Length: 101
Image: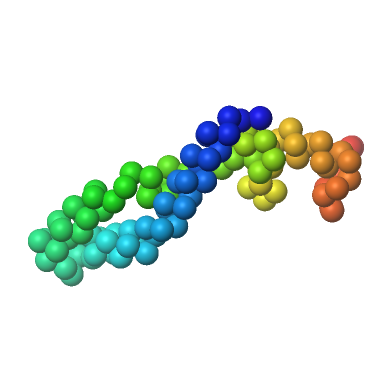
């Protein structure tokens, strides 16, 4: 089980990303638009730099929904590899079976 502080930090980051998503996308659009003047584009880049660091979606980390484990997380299920295996072995995930050949 991951530390509760790390799990809460990740939740806080997700809220921040969601909060600034519209503003961030607008500034990105302006800064990459070649038709805009250099001053406008520079101002948009400065605005992007002024946003909080945690407003960037690249700072998000996928974590297991049950344990908070940061590595070995399957996106489709939102579970870490260990918990996914346990739940699949109990037959609680429809359509998932143990491979045999």
